[in-house]
Image (tube, rainbow, N blue to C red):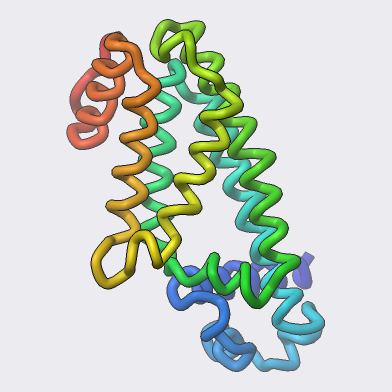
Length: 213
């Protein structure tokens, strides 16, 4: 149990560094220093940095899957679900160094494949299910093709990290993701859905406000 606790602490501390500084710029020495442990301790649990990156990626995706399921389970309807996802997305973007995903893709292909699988399995399935539910509720336009729009949503997420499209010296990643997310949602909505989404957004900014659909 103690060994498991130590390993989880290493993964959590390493993820904090990756989120703040990206992956490439963080060395095993940096990780050891941040955790106040020896490099020998790190190598007792992980063969090398590549394995740490892989395990951190897996843990991050598993945690995101749990948060996704928690939101789905607690949401009152498809619109409420999207409003809750917008809050989660904003928080994640505020904590994320945009270079992290670039580093994974270029230098850690196995860990990158974990993230790609997560997107195309979990995110796609979540979007498709949400769209089908929202159409049935009358919140989304009935003519929507859920498979096409699920793909479009993934492309939007990826585009926000493309420095050639949204250069870091001109655009803020939090604002870019928030703008693209709202654009996506409003494009889905019927008038009923649009009004409800606006109410949920207002309630996020004013937690004392009550939502009535």
